[in-house]
Image (cartoon, rainbow, N blue to C red; front, side):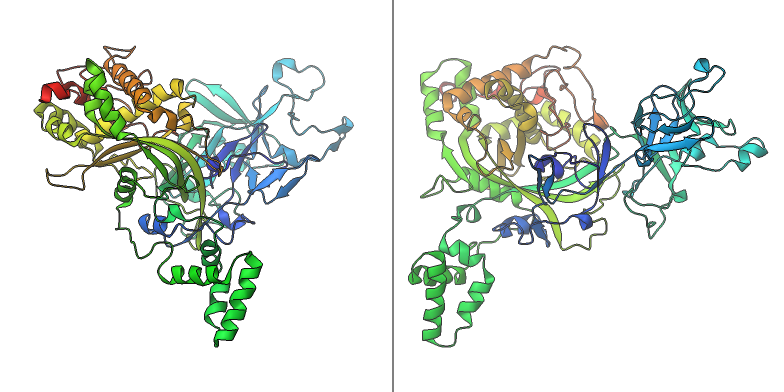
Length: 626
């Protein structure tokens, strides 16, 4: 546990501040302990997410992480997420001397030369730099800061950097060979070198460079907060990385939208309360006589403030299969079921449901008859336009990776029967592209040749997503790039920072008669607040506003401030998986993109280089099609 509470957003707790992450606080760095140390997690778990669990193939319960808050008197109430200060080594900003956990030092110390002196854990207690030394050796007093380096292994292990071993790579004489690690006294210092830094021992004057790799087999701990060694000592080398390096910690999450019928559950109703209380259900079912059953129903009805017939009807609904009523989700068809829910009109929709859509498709099509020029082409390209006035997203933490290695579960072993999860509420804009235009454009030889370059680079790249690995195709590349362009436009038009907006790409290619084809984009915001967001995003789905948004995005695709360099790039970014896309035109904050800011190319939206026809270059207006 840290010395004081550090506030963290719940949504961050399941992402870059999750188990095993090194988190920068206002005063120090900490690492988050695994879920076996968490107390106060919701034992009941998330309700009405059976469809989500099936679609994501999760056999464990989903529980909300524990919560805590700081009271007015400064005390913490609730159950905070346990963490510990890490790295434990600090470096003096003045002399470079290393101190191990100086915050554990006593407040006073007695020495023969100076008597009893006060100890400041935040200041260097070693001798001053040489150029300041006179007859006496003054205390340095420089500010101590935690070192920015850690030792990480691809098996998910994390440890302190072996500073003593780095300073003594090849002992040259007996004094250096006899030198032993002494964590209680500062004797190692980090100094600038020709290439980076080196570690020097003041005791024996040995020194060595800070290497990028080091054998992990010499280490006893698998995580900083665990004293027990790994069951199977990892072979090979670990990496010495800066804490800001993304390879230190990469969260593995999965997400899904709550859609009908589970989204239509009216929370707080009799059937919902009875469904959530298996004890009450068993109590009714175990009644042996009609009188006993009537008495039990009456007692429950009085407790809930409803009629006996309401309880009776609620039990019948549960027996009929409430809340799924026999509906099932095909394996791996998570996005397909969400897509069908988004394009379908839900009858008798109530505003307090967890999935509320408002269809603007007819008004969008009618808009084309009143506008001239290129606006008609844009309207013809978009098949459906839907405002998502309310949505609920389930965010599940599967674990984390280090150095792109294997997944480490939140409890480190995978033995726990639950996973941390959150319910996020928000709103969004959903639109689909016209299938006939897409199919005609996808057959263009130049488009297919440019796509083949992405395919060759994508194979074996290891690109992952909370929605699963993408099927790279021309339609995916145009949908993904268009989503990024529109998020950048929404940042100025809807009042949301780009980092708070996210994308869900619905893409599936098929033959002419394939009803399973998908070509849709959902841009949304979701927060851990049941009230959701402010409504500024869904208002952009109003047809005239959406037209201005789409027009600006397509215009932005045609020109970048770094053109012609950006437009003519043969490849850049991880695994060279971007082409005509850079920070000036199409890249987003990492939190917004579901695919790690790769597989982007403005050339698929509109022509920017090499005569490649963009989708919106081949779209014809109604008068042209007639």
